[in-house]
Image (cartoon, rainbow, N blue to C red):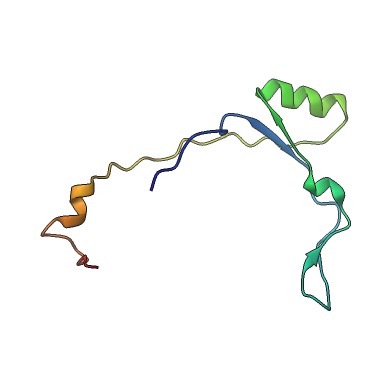
Length: 89
């Protein structure tokens, strides 16, 4: 399995929920009257996102992205004779 990096460099503006979600008693679905929870805006740079939030008087919290830790893997390791957990079909 491979995970790509597409669309991971954009800065995202999401609105905090204004009201809690409710469970519909008949169907059991969750619903909300807050339409801003559906809005997500993408910006190319951090500065553009901050400028937009300040211009429209939106309170914001900034979360810096973290670098994922990469573990080297080899397909041949699946068939090693000294595996701790046996592998079979």
